Amino acid sequence: MPTSTENKATAASAPREGAREGFSLGAFLPYRLSVTTNRISRAFARRYSARFGLSIPEWRVLAVLGSFAPLSSNEICERTAMDKAKVSRAVALLTGKGLVDRAPHPQDQRLLRLSLSAAGRRSFEAVVPIAERLEDELTAELSDRERAVLDRCLERLGAALDRLEGR
Amino acid sequence: MPTSTENKATAASAPREGAREGFSLGAFLPYRLSVTTNRISRAFARRYSARFGLSIPEWRVLAVLGSFAPLSSNEICERTAMDKAKVSRAVALLTGKGLVDRAPHPQDQRLLRLSLSAAGRRSFEAVVPIAERLEDELTAELSDRERAVLDRCLERLGAALDRLEGR
DNA sequence: CCAATATCGTTTCAGGTGAAACGAACGTCA
DNA sequence: TGACGTTCGTTTCACCTGAAACGATATTGG
Image (cartoon, rainbow over all chains, first blue to last red; front, side):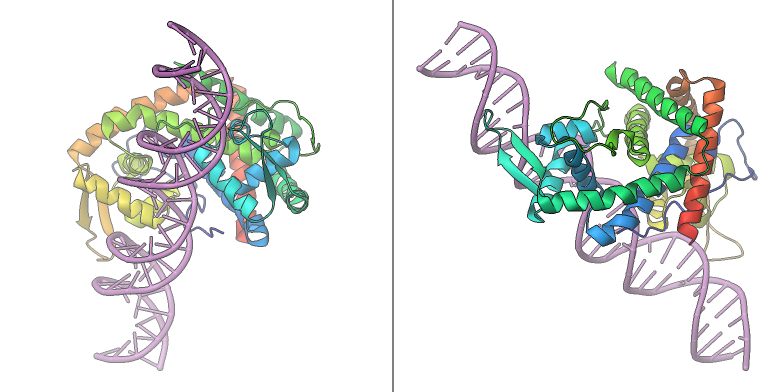
């Protein structure tokens, strides 16, 4: 859906006049992560959004429901790390498209019991290979060890964030 | 500025009923990168936005101008990987705050010649240590080797994206 | 039992976003 | 020179976003 002009990759180049050494945005980890992540999101969206008409939030909901249905909205929030408003909208769109079934929870009327419809499961099964292929293409140049280190780094960054937020 | 409810970190847990093994969002690299990156952006914004009144785009513009002034808007686009509309707005805000000076380019009247004002440089010098400290805290648990591998992974992901986009 | 409080999901609201349209300035080529 | 296409930065437009307010349901405490 977005064919952005942004994030076309930017190699850090040499400082020019007025250079203030000691800080380089191009080497700043939050910045690098942000650029790479945005580019990946776009690349992924380009592949499936046109074909399936799914936004990223919708795809995420589809993904967790494909693996863990039935879930309440709140459980989807936890599993996708999206806020409840975003989940609510994505679920509304997916039910409107007939991809998600929405039923009341038998014990607690506040909760929804969300699951994939037959059509939803077909979409899920169709998108998963695309997702996996993109991941393979992205990580093709990474050795198994590098991939393992990358996973560990993300885990530790998450733990560091837990500490920072938990203060 | 944003004290989000989103991205509070979500550990992957065991599949439940209806589990469809073979795909787990929690192990999907684009997803993990996205969650971690968004959390870092928020953590960073919390630290400086209240104190300096800077949005993330503004901070990025400040950062590149602090290191590479003078730059045109287009050069800022390249260096920050933001699209031109976002840069245009950030520059407008920064000039409004008196942090950035805007002059016409002597040879090419289409270009702007942007640089930090004295106040802008003071803000830059004030934010840089905060940025560096956050990065240190985030990567405190990473060994030098892990950090190096992480950098290399990001580089190779970027190269893979170049290929994917360049087609 | 009845308040008071908490939780769930939706909706509202103000603001940010990218894509595209736009005007102005430049370069080109005859 | 002048018509044409290009590049630069701004603005418009439709959409997406998170925070907060909200109604509905459940739970707790008196």
